[in-house]
Amino acid sequence: MDIDESLNVFGEPLESCSEEPLTGFYRDGCCNTSDADYGQHTVCVQVNQAFLEYSRFRGNDLTTPMEEFGFPGLKEGDRWCLCAARWLEAYEHNMAPKVYLAATHQRASEIIPLDLLKEFAVDLN
Image (cartoon, rainbow, N blue to C red):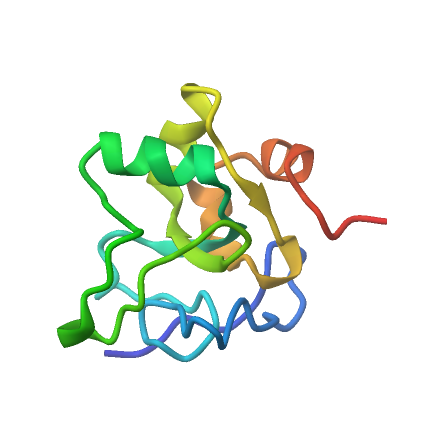
């Protein structure tokens, strides 16, 4: 399966989201995607405790380690490639985490308007 071109929402080279913990659909540290990534893990976020609790409440526990998948569990402050639809759902419930646009794949804007992502950006000057 071919990985989509590694470009961020500005059409520039996609920056790394996180090496610790290692994130991304391909576990390459980037929010790369392809047609195989049905969840479209394209939004680089900085998780906070409120979002982690919200996510667990919605059935996606991101705090419990799953060593068989190399997943250490997330804690407040970690950066992670989040599914675009999950971010939008969190936004609709006033629980959306902050976003790193330079590390957010351009395909995220197919689901989330860029202006909305910019409102939550931590890396805009």
